[in-house]
Length: 180
View 1 (cartoon, rainbow, N blue to C red):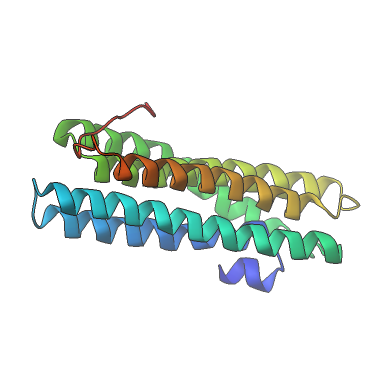
View 2 (view 1 turned 120 degrees about the vertical axis):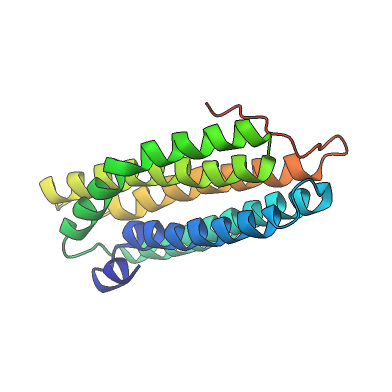
């Protein structure tokens, strides 16, 4: 987040904020596992992870709109390229491992946590592409804001899906694992 703030890159800032979502999600998974088998705890943890996603998407959307209307762009995108590249180098393996754990334990909360990692992969891809495009064509002032909006859309969709799943009457706490 500090690189995004310092470089005036909203896409990079949003990517950094997603890292905090990852940590909060992991803490919710730990909280849920303290009472494994408690359906209400599973429901609450899944729903809270979804709301974390929605809050992040809302903030990134607002910032992107402000950035686009002010026609601002980051002075450099090198930190975005480096950070996104590093993230892409290991996040796929982490996502697959979390998804396997979700299936093995049949846990919606663990599946939601795996979705956090998948969202990080998507965010990394969008950040990398947006940063590279801006680096190659700096006259495209809108690229960072547009990349941030794409990130917000991905994050918001994930959050909405989690909240809806946890709010259903037939929620069993089981893993739908439809993301594999």
